[in-house]
Length: 151
Image 1 (tube, rainbow, N blue to C red):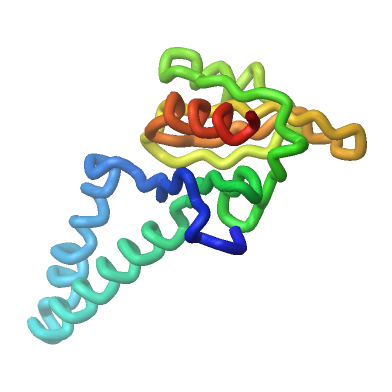
Image 2: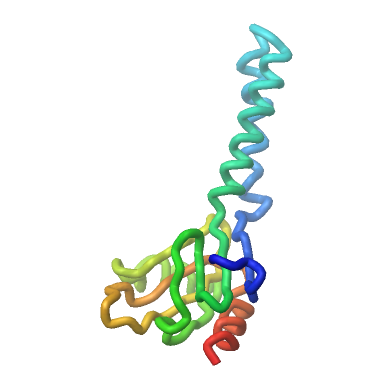
């Protein structure tokens, strides 16, 4: 979005803490692998790789923004005038929406371990994309803010 001062909603959709547990095994693995050569090298390399992985997870996490400019996910921006409606996809319907019900033309942005989504329908004759399906931890709030912005 151009102006972050006008944002009504902003969320970085990070994976759950439980899904990051495997990353914690990188440090002891690197330490044990390099232990025959150097204790310090194992600790430094293990810590460096662990921090690099955590940083990449942080920066790769989608950022959902809502404001007067529209609905943005990362670099993709959907102006408000092209949004027909939005609905919450609860966790129990999420698997179907990401699988058998997913349109091949839909714009999607998922996040590991986030089971709730928002489905935003597009009303633009020139755009073949029928809807956006976006992972969010608070889909009810996203729909609420989007509805308020459309008025």
